[in-house]
Length: 487
Image (cartoon, rainbow, N blue to C red):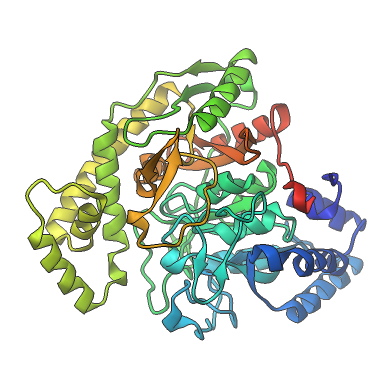
């Protein structure tokens, strides 16, 4: 197995250190990653667009600047990729939609500009599902992305290409987005790190469908990486309001609540009736929790916010699908209104909840939003007594590719029986519906050899606290492990 001293499996933090020390050049590192892409991307299909010549020129410029003693940014010379849905001038920005296959954006997202201003060399883009709306990553424009741990399985979504590229050692750092675990789920499935920031901490400008400028509800942009240190590094770079808002307010994330395991107060949630979790995942999270307790942390397996989980899930689905409702055409909206009118009283399927949210009136939405903020206050009260909550990122490890039918019709195996894939959206919305940050860190492998990550949820604006615990877990318990076939 390759050592993590190999550049392709190093953390971005270590690679930047090597670049600054002159131990490796940016062009040399870019060519190293590019050789990995040429060797391994055909089987994984994570990186779906590149401009290697422009990247080579940027890497050469980075090397020249360092040689001349110029001021270097925090990512100076680091080769990296970003999710297809981020605006990057001259690149495709189709969101996997066939009608937008040939669309090219003419400006950069704010997050992309900040990465470049910090010295990053962005050489490609990674795959996504259509509309960023699946926990697998396939579309007509770019095809299917496979999980490097098992090519028959999904890498997660919607930042599936991001996580797969990192796990296979084809990029130095990644930028993804998350409204329904789209950073957290792929990090868990592929065995890497991911951070879903507190809502609004990272500007969403330049990460919307073409022609849309208003930021959506719930959704955030954030980093994926091979180390918790990298999450902190990247968040420091991209955090902050957009250029208009930044003239009036600044992000001021507080330091971590604790720096030692023994000083953390940790709640643990292994499963829930709303979304049953496979025992293999539960066992790994419980084992981690027991380890943290043995190191002196206060660990409580019963502590919960004063929130009914079924109610919280229904509220999340209503707000989530209202937030994504603008993708409907006028004709689709009218048709969905007719379908909603035909539902029997008490109809409670995911499909019915989705269509009701797609067609919800503004007054009703205001009521949903009011309920969201009432529960948000209950989470704030909970985090007076606890620093973080550990919980699953998904109901199981990565599942076998399934592209048949609609997402809400598909199932996955959990504890020997089939459950709807949409059930596990609970583990996305339990925190992100209420604006909370969540960090995913790898914690081991299932008996089948598939990676599992723990989701570390913290208080609103407690991003540095969740990342800090991920860093301690990485140092004291479990770190990134390369997929055997790509090591």
